[in-house]
Length: 167
Image (cartoon, rainbow, N blue to C red):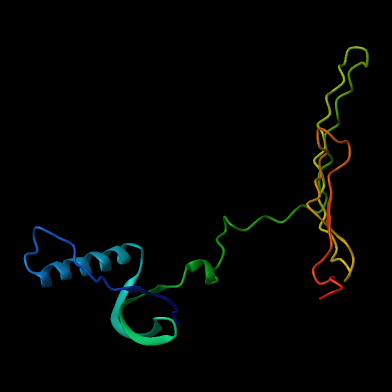
């Protein structure tokens, strides 16, 4: 069973000027043909044109019903969503039961001639904070790196909304 996805676009209201089209009807037909061909190049199949009602605001409190001309298109759903059989090239071979031993590491160089390797600075670890208890102060905007001026990370604290004793 095939499944499709659908889209609706507004039908052109004005026609484009063209040398080949002399009358307004010919110009409109050419504009409509160009739009249908554009959608077909994206894989959409033209189904039909529909005139559908839409209730819209008119003034401050009034409502009016307008009719819109829409072009309806469909295309088969993407193949990625449908299951398919794997080919032999896509199947990974099973890992061996006894993996081979890693090769022996070379002997380290004498300590007198070796330069100390520059260690990279570890990346800061950011962990998500737990949900604060009701009425507790929360910490937001916590910097994980120290400021060049201060040695401690900067913290901003604020009280949660709803703790106003007057309210």
